[in-house]
Length: 115
Length: 111
Image (cartoon, rainbow over all chains, first blue to last red; front, side, top):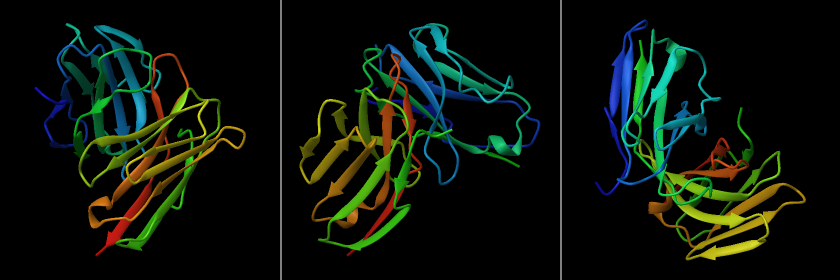
């Protein structure tokens, strides 16, 4: 597609439930980032993939968070045993090349609400 | 933790007026970028300024960068109602190109 697609757009999860958030980057894009944006805040880095390799996962808040990109295209962010503090918008961004810090396209995000 | 802070947190102006917002950051950067986010939407890239540049223009946008003060400003001239959005600065500090965002400035432009 023309842009970065994220699904679902909205997700309501009961506390303790597992969720999976999907990101479809622009075809051929090498770099893929996940960010978490709490209400009224700027996005915060979660993890980075270069093709299928997860090169940086230093931003994942806990071991309940797991991300994968097995074939170097679609990525999934999984959150196990969700808690209320996980409520946020999860943004995905991709770029054609890596390491230059520009040329990113962001998806519209998935708004996760944990009740 | 977030790299920088933005000032003001919120800004309300009338159409035709200029809007200025500032961003301060903490560590050395490769480049600094400004993004716009409409409510419930993703981030849209506005402009990039490299660490060796001091000023850049794009349409009605003007960005300055002062690396000695670790600060940047974004000026939107002749604002329009469609400029209503949150504006974020983002710095790139590492070789992966990952961003560190400020907390954003919420701008409301009334007709």
